[in-house]
Image: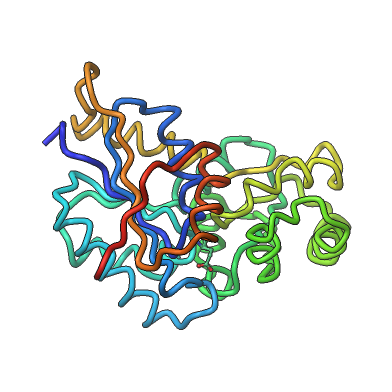
Length: 265
Ligand code: DGL
């Protein structure tokens, strides 16, 4: 089982930010990535639809013989993680628990801002998970639906993106947040821009990095780490293939994605 691949899925190619972070920490793991590009975005869909899509994504990955699954999508984690854990026996890791732990790692954090898709914000999954772990936190949530298309357009520091970021974030900054949770696969690409516009004492928590750290500790705990001598292959499968997705995949992964295959769910 240890030599079997890990399965990652996301609504599209944004989850490759999580793959990239995982590959840095776990270079020997083979990864099968499924991006549901035919049905992206999940962030604007209803909870029922997201659960149905996520269930189909997991079924497809299980058919590839994966040893564990990473939901490399905040919206799918927010709406489908409990359902998937009840339905399937394979270990399933989402992006929320680790993001919450990383936020609370700093004992002095009292005021947390969360930005995410509409679906993630509506679920209040981060807010609930944070409140369960620490009482007395002040949490400000903000749906930021315009950021995914702006990142996909590569408008990372375009004046339009700066204006949108200020509109979403200035009210939170005025309320005095100490940490900002970037609760969406696409937002790590905005970190340099965010550093330029936010006060330097606001901690940025990137769920891709923290999820990779959590994955490593879970694989260690379950004795599922890949033997060190081989491995490290990445296979990307998308439910819709287009030149645009290939270009985006390269950007999210920060290197060539290799041959991308078409998946039929
Ligand atoms: N992957 C989604 C997330 O992390 C963003 C894109 C979408 O809305 O499907 O929430």
